[in-house]
Image (cartoon, rainbow, N blue to C red; front, side, top):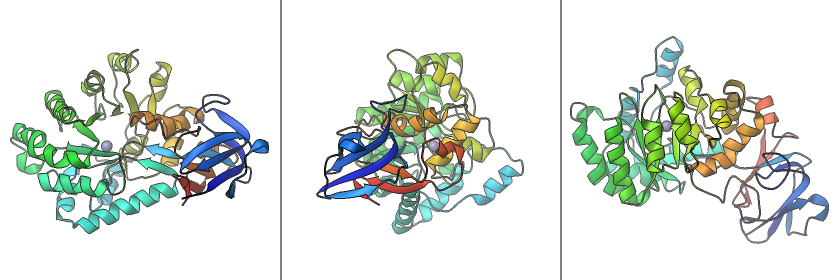
Length: 389
Ligand SMILES: [Zn+2]
C-alpha cells in the first residue's frame, strides 16, 4: 500500500530493540510505516507527519507474533481422541495416522480452506508470521501438494515427510526413508524452505533422522527437528550438531542437551510448544533451566489436530508464564523475536527501522496483560506488512 502511516499515541511500545529492559520498551511512542516497513520509531511528541494515522489510544503495541511451528495442512479433527486422553488414555503419537488417512482423501480445495481458516484465526490473534509444515500426506504426491498449498499462504514452509512411517511401510521403515530422501524430497523441495523430522521412539530413530536431514541440506533446505518430546533421546544434540535453526519440544532434556544448546557457537534455538503439553496433559518443558543456561528460547503453537489444536500465541504465552516459569517479558520475547530467530529471520519479531511493519495493538495498557488476562481476546488491531487487517 502506498503512502505513509503513523501508529500514534502508543502507551507502551515493545520494540525488542533499543529501549527499557529485555523488550526494549518505549513509552508514549509512535511508529511510522512506509512501504510495508518500519521507517521511524520514537516519542509521539516528535512523530513526523504521515498520510494516515492509527490512534492506539494509549494502549500497548507489540511486534506481531512469530509462530515458528505449525501443522496446518490436514483434514478431519481428533476431538474424540482428545476426549479419550482427558479420560486417562496416554498420548503416543499414533493418532497421526488417522489424520494421514483423512488428508489423503481430501480435495485440494478442502485442504486449502483449512489452511486459510487456521491462518486467519491465528492472524486475528496477532500472528503475523506462521511456519507451515507438511507431514499428513506421506506419499510423493500428497507431500508435494501439501507444500504447494502451504506455500500459497506462507514463505516459511517445511517438508515433514518424516512425520511418522505410514502404515503401508510399517514393516520396512528403511524403504520409507529411501522414499523420503529420494522422490518425495525431489517433489517437495521446490515448495519448501525447511526440512523437519519427528525424531522420537515410535517415529524416526537418530540414524534415519540424520540421513533424512542430510539429504534435505544437500538440496539447500534448512534444518529443524521435533526432538525430545515424549522422552529423552539424541534428537536435540543431533540438531545442534547439524546446525539446525531450531529443535522443537525439548520437553525431556539431559544436562548434556542443555549444554549443547547453550554452547558458545550454537545458533540452534530451543522452541517450546506448551500447547502440546496442555493438550496431552503431560509435564511441561523446563523453560527456566534453558533460559538460566543462556539458551535462546522460542514459543510456538504446534497447531495440529492431534496434540495441540490451538492457533493462539497469547494462549501459549499465558501457559509459558504460568506453567513453565517464564516471566511475562521472557514469554513475549520468545513469542516474537525468539520465533524469528527460530526461522533465521531478522526482519520480523522486532519493531525497529527497516523491519517489516507487522504489529499488534492490544486492548490493554501493557504486554503483561497477555499472561495476566488469559483467554481474553486482547488483540484489537493487526498490521501485516503495514496494512491494517
Ligand atoms: Zn509439531
